[in-house]
Amino acid sequence: MPLRIIVIGAGIAGLCAATSLRQAGHSVQIFEKSAFATETGAALLLAPNGARVLSSLGFSFEGARACRVHVWENCHGTTLERISCVDFDDAEERFGALVWAVHRVDLHQELLRLALGGCGAATLRLSSRVRKVYPESGIVELDDGSTHSADLVVAADGLHSIMRSMVTGGQALRTGLSAFRFLLPTSLMRQNPELSKLLDWKVPGASIIADTKDPVHERHMVWYDCQSGDVQNFVSIEYPPTHQLLKGDLADEKTAMLQEFAHFHPALIDIIRLAEDVKCWSLSIHDPLPTWVYGKTVLIGDAAHPMLPFGGQGSNQAIEDGGALGYLLNGADDLATLEQRLKIFETVRRNRASRVQTLSKVRAGKEKEIEQELRKYADGMDAVPTSFPERIAHDYGFDVLGKCAEALAVEKTRLPEPGQSQKVLAFANGLVGQETEGVPITQMNGVVQRDANYSFVPIGV
Image (cartoon, rainbow, N blue to C red; front, top):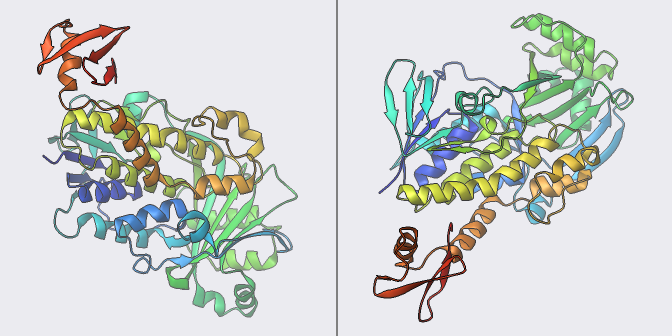
């Protein structure tokens, strides 16, 4: 029978998981604390590792008004001189998918279509804040006092996850980094002759404009378009903050941004002055968790691995989580299989996401500085990235669904043949020497073995 699954949170991770799980045939219910009344947000980059998963779910990049990212360039903040450039025109050949830029709201709307549309759709309950989760029983309690049970609870409730805080007791830590974000209509920039020239000069992709003379403060601006080119997206990072922001005061945040980037190229200052809705966030991170699975619950997305923006992988790792969960739970129709598949999920995802999470703490070119930390999460004999090109290959070239298929294939070679599970149970109950299904059971060096050309199964497999 299909599993009953509750997803906490209808963000990117939650909706990807809901989509993949419903497509796997399960019954999915989503609880979202917000009312979706005033959905806003900036844009984000969909790297090939995330875009590949979205394609497998039926995601329409055209429907989401996504823009191709052909080039990723680095420029001097004060002169706009180009320092380096990475060409992604051949990304599909190299990594299996293209690089895209998409507005978060457009991404969200397309994921809602996939999760809630058609036969076997997930159900979504808005304004439904989860107050408590009981991991061992799979019961969630809402603020209104109602309780709901499931075979699996997927905690996709973000940076301040109730599930993570309940189980680990740990809180996300502020880094001292701040992110300024704003959007500008392309048409508005075109009205300014100098900014119109700048638009024509800019490469068709993402531009990283950095203060190369001051690596301590990490000030840089990332610029790319979205919504079919009608909107320009700007994200600026600086550390440590030299200003005191009044939360929610947009004028103050814009003034603070102008102060922090006053020494950048005059054209960039003009762009900031045009912005009407500058928002600033302090950036937080959490150390990699020792496990994501607790009883009948599993953490995904920012609940499992909150990341900093360096590398642009936060949303892509959430997408990998969601896609992998549905892929691995396809055909899981009982609790024993569910438990086994969740172990495989953690094997496929946790070290991978922990490496990317660790990489997200450093800018491009500083990978060598965290090599020893990365090695804690290396899979087998695989090398960890120690340069920017290796980081691109590591992040973009990962095929999470392919890894899931490989892990399932390996697991199938370890599974008991029909009837062997009864033999293992017989051994555990001290029945060695008796017959199970007509086959004598013997004990040899701590393993259970069938006589007459039957294979053996180690205890614990």
